[in-house]
Image (cartoon, rainbow, N blue to C red):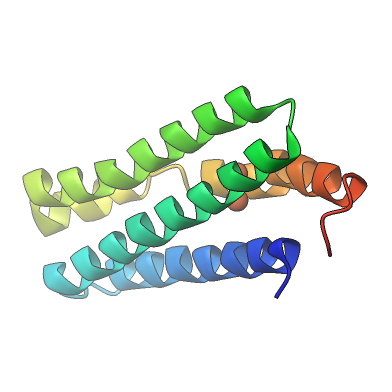
Amino acid sequence: MSDLADIDQQHQELVNMLNRLNDAVKNHESRKHVYLIINEVITYTELHFANEERLMVQTGYPGIEGHKNIHKELIKDAFRLKDKLHYLGEDRFREWFNRWPFGRALAHIQYADKELEDYLIQRGVKE
Ligand SMILES: [Fe+2]
Ligand SMILES: [Fe+2]
């Protein structure tokens, strides 16, 4: 599979994972199960970001610093999920989770990643 198709597929998988997490929390699934999904989200996100950052370096993407900073913030958001579940317990976590910035991850895919993908296409990275 090409790098660009990989990125698209990883985005789809990330959105699916976040939806699974949302469902698990809303359906009062066990803390253990929710932890597993959060760990999955963290591992997969780190892998995905490393992948994008490798492509940015390889192609000399001018927006690399700003883009990497957003990745750092998003990883922090993901780790916060784990910490909060640990410290707050399930009920208070569920309340807190309502305010977790899902939109931030989705907006990143929609705007910053879209910009990167357009650049990669321009630079002749295979679609
Ligand atoms: Fe991405
Ligand atoms: Fe990104």
